[in-house]
Image (cartoon, rainbow, N blue to C red):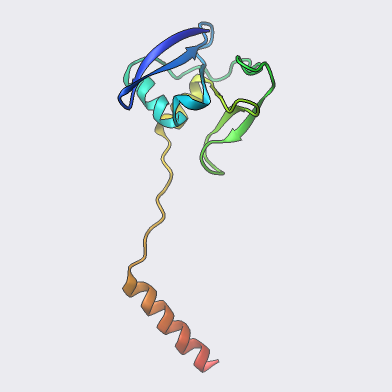
Length: 127
């Protein structure tokens, strides 16, 4: 793995990139993986496209990596180390989390909440 420095949120983040498959290893303190992936993408440091590569253990801890949901269930999955919290990202995963955005929960106005409460009150009186 080769160490690369990438500008990320005003700092220089040190990421390790596999010369063979293009996968990236992020230490836990490098930043939120999706934001770092976007910084890597903006810097032209990764080229998503490798569909599959052999996933071995954590480059730091040498323990097995766990495939876990990124941010929320139903979103892309990434490999995480259960010991150090690092993320090992295949190129296809980098692209997926760089593009992934959670859908914001729509806020309800006070009027909508009041109308629901009034409708609830009337429905309880009728029943």
